[in-house]
Length: 130
Image (cartoon, rainbow, N blue to C red):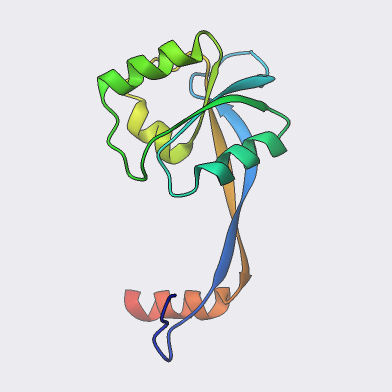
């Protein structure tokens, strides 16, 4: 159970899938299937978002949230992908890009939508920034 401080600014938000972008620019179309790789708090949500775009998640490699990828992890990802596309979030690609070749890596752009409280949140940010 979470306790919220009285007077705290509350906002509700959700992530929704955007477009897939290739890690390396090329003329290949978005893959039909791939292996989802993530080190995020809710990997099942990412995998569901990938599926919402029409890309089949054939396998998933899940690391703990905030995982620091290693060269060994990158090699294991490539072995398990076995020529299939590697699907990841922008957060994960930032941590993987120096470890894994970008060929056949696809990054799912995600969009943040606020359901409520955005005005109060922005006002609070403005107060802090002044």
